[in-house]
Amino acid sequence: MEKKNYKFIGLQIEGLRKIKAALLEFNDKGITEIVGKNNMGKTSVIDAIEILLKGFKYNEKGMTTTGMDKTTIIGTVGPWTIKRVITDKTNRLEVVNEEGLSPKKPQDFLDTLINELTFDPQPFLEKNPNDKLKFIMDLLKIDFTAENERVQEKEDERLEVGRDIKNAGEFKEPEKVEPVDTADLTKQIEDIRIGNEKEKKKINLINTLNEKFATFSNYHQGIEDKDLAAKIKKVVDTFDKMVETLPRPKYISSEELDTKLANASETNKKATDYTNYIAWKEKKEKLVKKQEELKNGILKIRNEKLLKLEKIKMPVEGLKITEEGLYFNDIFCENWSKSMGWKIALSLCETMQPDLRAIFLDNGESMDKDTRKELDKWAREHDIQVILTIVDAIPDDLQEGVFYIEEGGVFNKAGECVPEVIDEPEPESPDQEFDTNIPNIDQKEDHSNAQQPDLFNFEFENEPEN
Figure 1 (cartoon, rainbow, N blue to C red):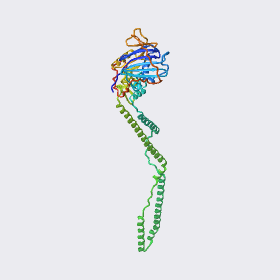
Figure 2: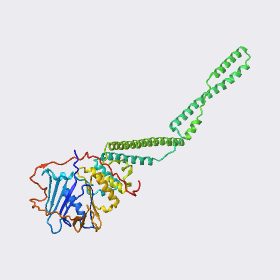
Figure 3: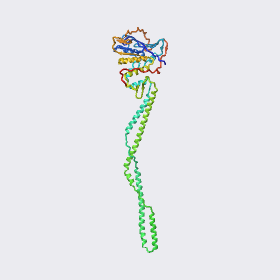
């Protein structure tokens, strides 16, 4: 949609705090200074514009000048005349253009002209890094609530896993030892004993046979009957050969098993230590794996956020949102110089309200003269009005284009700035938007695709390098 480039042409005030009556016409671009000492009514000029544009959002008791029954504020913004009349019981608004047409919803129309920085970018500059980042993200409608909750869940789980890893401690790998089954060892030893007993019976039987045939073998030697003696000898030889063929007894030693059984307690303790080590190692490996999975999950979510940010067009060239926070030309927001901060804040303000080319600043004395001079240069180059209040004594030599305030009276080099008397009919009902009998038009605009402005094209003298 086409930009309107409205300017705040003039402001008429009657009955606002110390200001009984004042008429101000602002410079078309650059700075319009409003100078005076403290408590003289300077801030009331900025407040009048804010009351005029915000209406019900900016209304306070006791704002009407003592002795007057109402506050009347009239502003000219581009082709629009905005009029607000406030009493203790009423707040009437009228918005009419040069053709006599009025928006269907006047306050909604006015809301499109202003933003959070219109009346003071200073709070943005004074925010801490996290709040600055939140402000920009809210401005760009960036919402990472869901992603941040997912990250927080994984961070909490990762922290818990980390504690479990720490509590698991460290263990030196012990010697790998197989456990001993004492019951099985005892059975094996008993089987050997029984087997050896059987072998022992075999040898006893053979020994008995040998003893008996030893007598018989010697007996044949005293027999004179050679034939009989030969037969007996043959029997003895046959017996000897038979005995030789008998299986020899085989004893099995249980010494090794006895040693194992004797050392079973110590062996099983080592085996238990090794089993416990393996269980600890597997558990810790699972925890470390889980921790790594959570870490990768967090990185994945953060990369998703970064991809979203890459697709978003920043309102100010050089402004960047990263995982660490808000940066401008690679300088972290906490390290921005004062002039750099003003560049960014005012450029943001320009972007956020592309139709109204005006910014209203209080406490301009916080800027030095060089800063104000460069601000004026920037505003002129960008075709922007800056209405700036400054606490200062009124000089003897009044400057052209500057308004001065003393005890609520407004004047400039040409003289007093006083409007004609405003005649207002009494309202019929309280708290209403003034309803005229002129045609209505819907003037509410969509500024979501506002053109991105350039930054200041200037450098301050003696500016610290970042």
